[in-house]
Image (cartoon, rainbow, N blue to C red):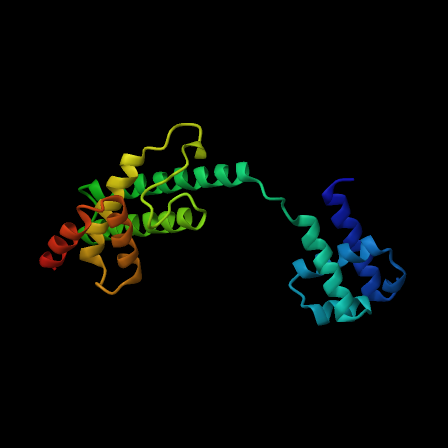
Length: 206
């Protein structure tokens, strides 16, 4: 039975429950669980669902927990690598589009500045997400897993991007901004011998 038919049947049962034509207490457990999921999708809270199905809040919570268990994914390193690789590809495409906008002479100056700032934000978010997944340790240099996608990752490009974004951040963000500080730490981790000198030069320009 397709999901569409399942949903239609659940809607039919729910309508009968609401009109009093069917006693929800006599409905099979799996149908009750389906009704709980349907009502949650409709934006109802647990007490409201319990009132409709004539059961306790605890019973609704059990059905909800069962639904979550059915939807749960087993740990899958391959899926994590694939999603991370896809994330990098999307970020690179977005930044490429922003660079084209920034280089276009017809683009107003204010929009060019916004494009640079948005590139920084995209890269900062990408770095943050890769760090949270363990592919880009903050204090251990750049350690991206080359198996993230079909082709090899251009690590030198990412290093250059981080260095560029650090320079942009020194112009666009206040010295105490957390994003700027995180980027400085990352750049120092990538270029430990040059990080202090770069920061000194950037500070003098401000």
